[in-house]
Length: 152
Image 1 (cartoon, helix red, strand yellow):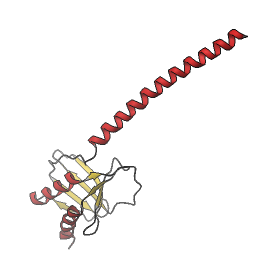
Image 2: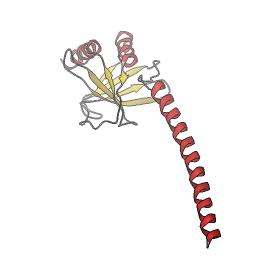
Image 3: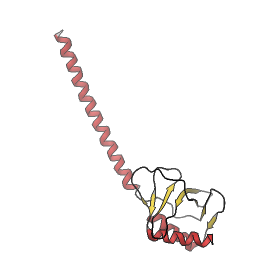
Image 4: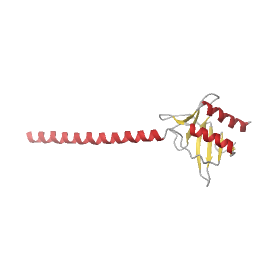
């Protein structure tokens, strides 16, 4: 009986040590991966070599197309200044749908919420609906000018 108790304690101790070591390694690796992802993903990654942008209130209707060099430069500035907000979001349906077109029929789809003058705007990638990127007040004002010029 004494041998069985001793053997049980030994197995339990050995199992606990192995479990603790394994758990600690996984936690460290996961933390390192999270840090690497968050550092590289703070900005809205975007290929700035786009040919045109289409914005619409509802998907596919009343589209506003932008393909002039000056407007595309403003959009490049807006995208490059957008910063990722921490956490997972739950947000209302998008105000606008945006498609960014590259050569060879490639494109990226985004959701867009335009703030009022002096407020921030929000951009979300359609393939990652748990992450938002915000645009500064100044960039929101430029975005309003561009969109209102086509709405009027």
